[in-house]
Image (cartoon, rainbow, N blue to C red; front, side):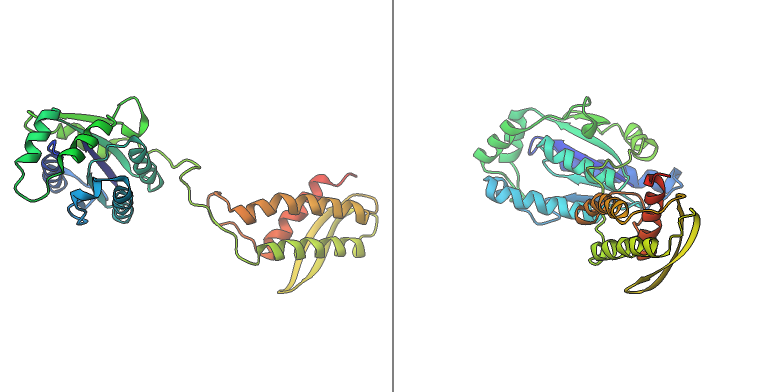
Length: 298
């Protein structure tokens, strides 16, 4: 239930650091951990068969970055520490990853792998695995690199590892991944719950049935009245508290229009309310009765 974002210049040693982090985390899980996490997964361009040539221009880079993000979302789970070993050089993309982690209620941290530009160029030219960047591509990626900052929430907590250090600060990283704060998702990351296709029809028909029934059955004495509505799916029984006077049709129709207008927005645009929203006839009827009781004048 954690996400580790590896960031740094191309050919700066990110994969080496990702492997060190994975190996050490697996040891920690076996030796002194009791909790929901059971595995450590490393996701990289190589694992997705994304070639270095994908970064030669924006037309090929955008779908490659999209494939990486989609794979990351699939791998996120409450029993997994996911290490994303990729350039991750755009702060907007790191923010997108951070939002996805918050939506899944995962702990996060960023590991910044630091190496000099000249070293990265040298290491790129000496690669023997066929995964070297074109010199102009490497230069462009280094130029466009947006350095992580501990001052922004999507890069925090931030751990910096220099090229000459033996290993990342694993005790601190372990604490961040197992004891750090889990930030709740904000409204921008919550999934929108869409209403069923017949919700608008049920809203109109149920409120219209209540208006007709109240007009037909009211006695002018006020108080609690038990009403039975005829709806397309059957009958709905409600109890409404009426004022001590005859309620006019125009008054009820005005309140109905107000109620329907408010709830149409939730039906057409969706809602981010916690839990399922019930758009059944009985639920709509109870909500409309409550609305009437609050707005009808005695």
